[in-house]
Image 1: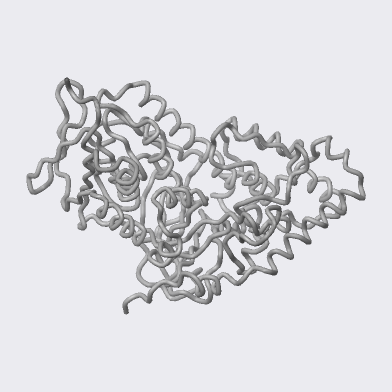
Image 2: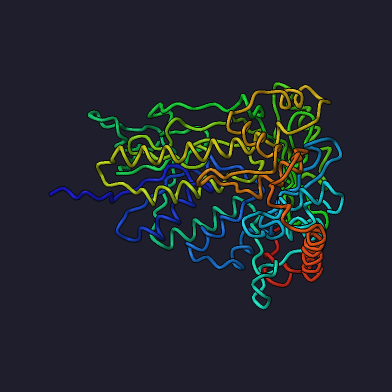
Length: 506
C-alpha cells in the first residue's frame, strides 16, 4: 500500500521566508519528514531593518526561542507602534500603538466615551490614554511586569521588534540546521513537472543535481520561480489603490538612543521609513515612479537621514498584489513569492508567519485534496484584501492636496468594504472586525482618528454614564496611564541592562 503521507519537503529560496519555514517545519513536523532548503549565496537578499508586529512573539515562542538571546543575535530593539508624520496634513503626527486604549466599560470600548468627552473639550488626544502611544515618543520601554495588579497597563504590554532581517534569517538557519534541515547551495536552473498532472516533480540545479520532493515551498521572492515561472499561476494587482511601485533602502549610522517605534513620514510621492536597530538605523523611501524619478527619490531619502549613510540606496521594484493562488498543485508560495503589500504597517514577516501557520493547520496528504487547497487560498485572499484595505485607509484618509500623488490618493475610488467602514466610523465611531482579519478595532480607531476621521456621534449607551462620572473616568484613565509610563525605564537603558548585542566587527 502506498504511503499517503508527505515525506519530502523542498524549500526553494532562503532569506527570512525560507528559514522561517524551515525552522517551523523542523520544530513541528520533526524527524519523520525530510526538509531540504535550496538557496544561492550569489542571489543573496536585501539586508534591511525590519519592523514587525506583536504576532512574531508567538512564532518565536513556538520555536521556544529565548527572547533575550534572540534580541542580542539580531541586534534588535523593541517596538511599541508606528509613528505617522504628515499623513493627514503636513504637520500632523500620531502613533498607531499596539495594545489597548483605556479600558472598556461594559460592552462599550473606551474610545466611545472619549468621543463624547472630546466633543465636550474635556479629553486630551486619544494617544494620551494608551500606554504604548504615550511611552513611545518619550523613549520609554519595558516588557510586562509580573509584580503589578492584573488590571495595571504594565501587566500586559504589547510590543514587537525591530531587527536586521538578514541576521534573523541567519539565526533561524542555525536553529533549523541543528534540527535536521539540510541546506543545499546552488541556483535552480530548471523545474521539472509531472506529465500527467503538472505537479512539480523536481528542481534541477545549475550543477545538474536533481532534487525531488512531495511538497515544494516557493520562497524565491518576487520571481516566483515555482509558483509563477513554472506553474503560471497569475497575479491580482492592487496598484490602483496602492500606487507605490518602488522603494529605495539604505542604512545610516546610529545617532542617539533608538526609538521604541518605527517612523513613517509621508513624502511628496510616497513615504519614508526609519527603523532603529542597536548598531545602525534602517531607512527607505517607498514611492510611485509615476510621480517622482529614482534620482529625485534618492535625493529625498538621503536628505532626510539623521546619520551618515552606510552605502548607496538600493532600488527595489515591486507590484502590490497577491497570486491568484498561493497554493497551486503541490507548490505553496510564502513571502514575496506569494504577494506583496508595502511595509507601511510592518506586515511582511507577519504574512510569512501566517502562511506557515495556515499550511501546518491544513497540512496535506500526498493526494493534495482540492478542498484543503481551496480553503488555504481563500484564507490567504481574505487576509491580503483586508490588510490591503487597512493600508489604503492611510493613503485615502488625507486632506493633503499639495502634490499630484496625494491628490490621486485622496480622490481615488476605494473598495466597497473600506468605504462602508469609514462611513460607519464617521457616523458613530463604530467598527466591526470581520472574522479573523489581522487589524483589530484599536488599530482602525487610531488610524482613522489620527488622520482626521472624527465621528459625528457616538454609541447612545454612552449617555447612561452621568456627566461627572464621564469626566472622572476619562481623567482617571489618563492619570493611570501617565503614572505607569513615568515608572518605565528608558528604552536604551532597558536594552543595555538585558539584551545589548555584541559589537559589530569593524
